[in-house]
Amino acid sequence: MKNRLCVVSAICVLVVSSASSRLTAQEGRPATPARPPQMIDFATAKKAAAAAEAAAVALKGSVAITVMDANGDLVYVQRMDTASPRAVTSSMGHARAALLLGISDIQAYDAMKAGKPVPVMISALPQGNWEITIEPGGIPIVKDGKTIGAIGVGGIASLDDEKVAQAGVDALTR
Image (cartoon, rainbow, N blue to C red; front, side, top):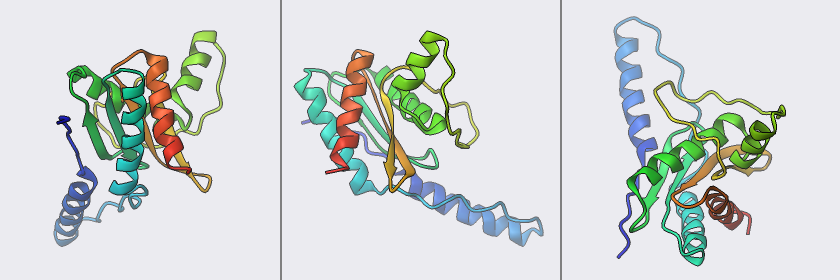
């Protein structure tokens, strides 16, 4: 049986921020603006992760897979059996980098290695001490021209991480 860790933190964030907003308004301070709605649901995240897992198995690799919504909130995280614990942090960093830059990690990585500029659309992510990983393995998930999330994969060779992430994105366009 595969060891899976599924995180649906977006719901927790919405509940906590809703309660926090009410408390601030009651104290007479202006409430903080609401975050944009989650744009990728759990079922969609699971579909992308399942395709990514199948691609990893085909490559005989064990990986961690992270799917984040456009806010940078975790929607789904999975660590395959025998994948290193570090793979989870790596997969999150890949997804975060793809969201932040609005391009795949491999595009950013290739430009960085070549010392060339790359056009990016920087997104505001939540504040915090969050790792970003600019190596192949993270790809934005785009629907109708809008970034709705990102998938990040870590745990095997970077170029294979990218192939596995791409399989997850491709599953959403079929």
